[in-house]
View (cartoon, rainbow, N blue to C red):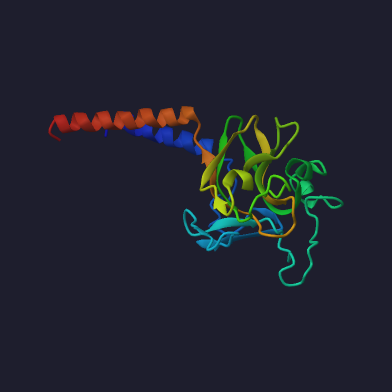
Length: 254
């Protein structure tokens, strides 16, 4: 490998490093929930089977050892043991705890998703204009959705910070989209930061139209910055140079 190629690769890697410097901490949850703020029924887990309306349920696996797990029942008993079918209204009047947790106007989640209760996770981080952040997510609809009675659990993301004048929940998936007792499978959420500064990104899952029955679950894993297209091109050029150099060395019999 000649000196020019070595410098090219080093420069490309430095550019990639610079692109992701502001990404949130503990992006893959291998350190548990360190660095994250949570509300409701949130934890970390290894491979786990999700019970659903149609047995026997489904098993979800993390990308490494752990992943975040959010359950829409906000950690409260919903009548199975105590007969109490009125847990705290975390996403409805009079408390609006989830709305305020995500920095939304009171009643936003109730009006958007018929939400009554749920759970959330968020983190504040420093980002650069043009930086792309991503989150792998997996939504489990354990309920039997009903479009007539609005029984439709929902997973969403909220981003606030410079260049975002009016934060709103962004739909990831709901029970009607995933299907009864079904999973979305792992998907990627991508977002390009509009300006440089401090951002807060949060993920939530809520019960829609009911506060008991079966609860939806949202799994998160491998949250990290994504190289910008220009940085990827730079790395590609460096690797192309390396390939060319190796071919020349092979042709010379080295």
